Image (cartoon, rainbow, N blue to C red; front, side, top):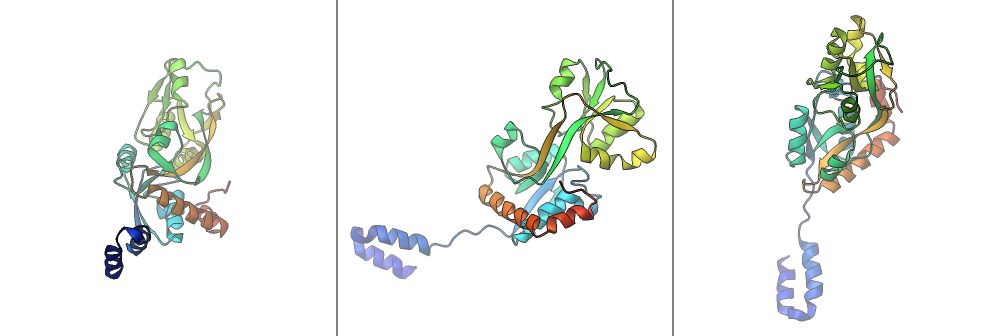
Length: 257
C-alpha cells in the first residue's frame, strides 16, 4: 500500500487515473457482520416465545441466515416498539409482516416466508346476515387494519384492539366481541385450547378475505440493507431447494403451500 502511494505521488498527473484504481483496490473492503439482531412479536404459530424454536417462521429465518454463515439472534418485543426501532435502524430486521404502501416506503422486503389468508371469524351460531351496527370487531394491536377498517366504519361497527390474537378469541368466546379479524393459520393455532373448552367459530365470507404473504423486512435506513436482503434471500432459496424449509414446516405441523 505504501509503495503504491509513493509511486503515485512521484508520477504526478500522468498516471493519476491508474493510481486511483490501484489505491481503490488496495483499500480494505468493509465486510458485513457475521451476526444479525432481529425482533419479532407474539404471532403463533409463526413466532412465539413459548413455541419450539420460537415459532415456525423464526426457525425459517434463523436457518436462512445460518445457510449464509450468519448467526441470527431473535428477540421478542411489543409489535409497535419492535417495528419503530427496526425502522429507525436499531435492529437488522423484523418479521413476519405483510406488504402495504407505508411499509414499502420504509423497508426492503425479503422473498415471501409463507402464504396465508386473512378473514373475519364469528361465533359458530352467528347469523351470517346479521347487522353490524354497534357490533365489535377485534383486531390486535399492531395488526394491519387497512382492509377491515373501511368495513367497520361503513357498517357503524366498532373496533377492539387488545394486545394479541388469543385475547381476541377469548373475547369472542365470552361474547365481548362479535367478530375477529385474523389469518386462518393464526386462528387455528391460537384457539386450540379454547376449542377444547367449548369455543366454536366459523369464517364469514363478506368479500373482505384476501391472501397475504409474510416477509422479513429491513429498514432502508440500515447500512447495507439491500445486501442483507439479498443475502437472506439467497439463504431462503437454498433451504427451500435442499429440503430444510419443508422439514421445518413439518416439525411445526404446518402444511407446505
